[in-house]
Image (cartoon, rainbow, N blue to C red):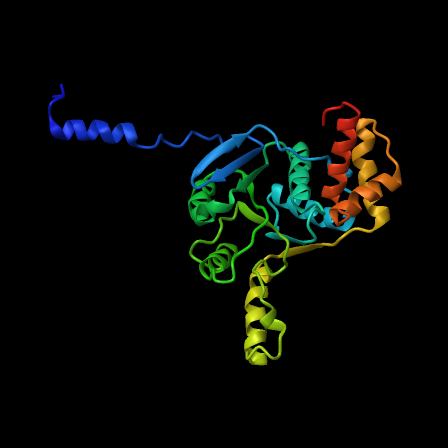
Length: 280
């Protein structure tokens, strides 16, 4: 029996009270999706995503991403993926919708793990955790970008993708979205001949940044959509909700926001639903 007056015992009890709770037990074999936040995993019962067929104006991108993810789910050779380009054109939605479709076709074969932005440094722990699980995993990093002065993050990402001691295990593939193909921010001086930088140094700087993107076996670009594609996207979201709209009003909504994109189309449909007294 412990002595409550023992100073060491009191210290031990105090440390127990302030210690963080143990990480929750996670079933990595059966859940559809997970959130990884600095070593604290969380299960999700389902993937929130539109149906793959609802995503318009990105047919070529859908075909590439689906084919790669489906192969991976069945244990065949597959690439790490970089989805880059125009804001709001469905990069994240495509990854989630594709994972959902693949899971419908091959239940339990594939898990989607979204990594919180501040948890990148704990990816080796995630890799170690998943390496012993008999399941394929897509590690989803949304809207990735590194600051110009950050030299550690890009090097670690290169190491995870290939060749490093922390490289991702065979049952994991990275799926990254970014607004820039190079992922890293660029300064205008890289393109400015009067900046004092030699042409060789400018070329080296650009090559080093693109080398990170080149580590992805599948690089898929997304571009702003035209008027007809934008209206088609609005229709694909509005029709299942029984909503009608005028093309002129949908285009005016996009003009107020300064762009035509899938995200803006969805925001317009949310406005239509709200005005009609419907939930989405």
